[in-house]
Length: 349
Image: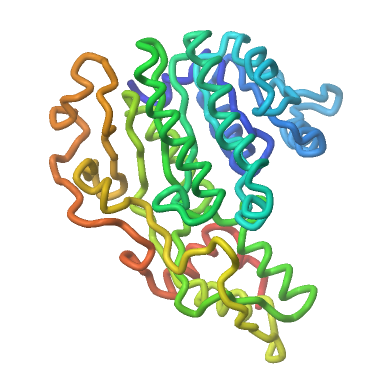
């Protein structure tokens, strides 16, 4: 099925939909002529800002295809009510995702990132929603912090949910750092330069995966189009030294007096992130140059779902080793190109 026709005249629920991902996803989904897009989040101010952004006339506050619902993914009743509104597809974006906050308040991270997933799974099965896509993170792989651990549990809950139903398909994507999202690294560095004329650098050897928001949404659509339930889809993301990122932004926004302060890793941080662990390598296949798929380690009780080698979109080429941010390092010039693509280097130096 073509992505253009999947969402046409369908009702789509986006949890955590008033954030950066949700705004971009909504903008692109509207091109597919859905019946309705439901934006479910607990951020009143963010929802108001989004309503104004998508306001289609000066006299009508709401876009005719958008419904804004205040609610918390932790609240089972609220989740059940919103899933019961004829939803066909779900993009699950809601999460607590700031590493230090999750480290300091792991119980809160658990409520959103684990209990929230359980609530969504139960309601999706109850209302026979067609497909649920869970947005995960590289930090869920070999996790060392509360954020990664809770997202890793969320992945396993989503994949295991396929055993409980034959009507709803549950699948995951994993992403690295998306440039420019709320609270993300690039705006934080730019703000440090502009307000303090100095930048904190954790470790000169630290590497991270980076992609633009538009590219990240492309991964969501690819997974929705190809997914059968039980898989994890991953993009062949480029990675860069954080040091290169800092130096580019200092060169662009700073001056000869801008200081770079080496502060060391924060609690819960890795030197390098992992997208595919050694344990997952035997179950990972190249789809094409851009995407990988990790097949489920569990039998999901559907016709031919254990016959992954026969999937039409599989290349038949297996991954040979784990995929970490130190394995696919790109140059400083390529990082600058990505930052320009993301709209962060538009001003004159």
